Image (cartoon, rainbow, N blue to C red; front, side, top):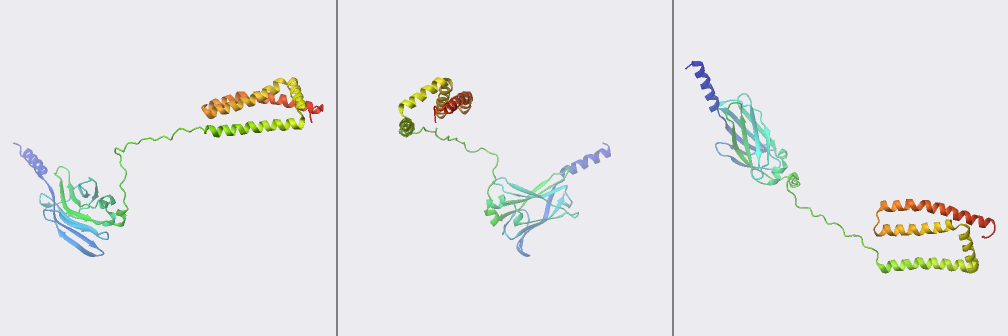
Length: 279
C-alpha cells in the first residue's frame, strides 16, 4: 500500500481517537480575600457551599490525549438537573492549557439559586475532528440571598387552567309597584295642571280657545301632540328592548314632523295674541 495513504489513514485514526480531558482541577470558595473552601478534583465531583457574599473559582488544565492543548471550545455549565435549567459561561484557555473560571454568588442566575438544590458544575471541551468531553467537577449549594428570596418564577408558554367566563346577570326591570307610583305621580301632575288652567281661565274659555286653536291650525296642534306621544313611545320601546340604532332612526323620522307642526302651532298662537284673543 502507498506509504502516503497509510500515513493519511493513521492520522485520521489518531484524530478520531483523540479525546479531551481536564487535569489538576481545583475548586475554591472565597469571601473577602479569605478562602472558605479549597478542594482538589480527582475523579469524583466535589461538594461545596457558596455563601451569598462569596465567589466560586475553578482552575483546571485542558489536555488532548494526555498532552496540554487548547480546545476550540471550552465552557462551564451550571445546571439544575431536576428542573433542566442551566447557565453556560465561556472559559478562556491559555496556550499552556490552563483555564480559570470565576463567578461571584451575585452573578449566579436567581432561578438556580432560588431552587435551593445542589447544582452541577460541568466543564465542556470540544474541537473539530476530536471527541469532546463533559466532566462534572463539582456540586455546589448556593445559599439563599435577598435577591433569590424575592425571585418569582417566570411565566412560560404552557397549558394554562381553563378559563370559565361568568357573565353578569341580565339587567332587571324596575319593580312594577315603583313604576306605577311614578306613573301615577306624572298623571297627577298633568291633571293638577289642567285643573289649575281651568280654575284660572274658566272651563268655557279654555274649551273655546282649544276649539278655536284646533280649527285654525288642526294639523299643527295634532301633529305636535302626536309627535310628543310618539317620542314617549319610542323611548319606552328603547328602554324595553329596541336597539339604539332603531331608536335613532325612529327619532330622525319623528323630529321633522314635530318641528313643522310645532312651528305651525306657535304661529297660530302668536296670531291669536296679536288679535287679542289670548293674553
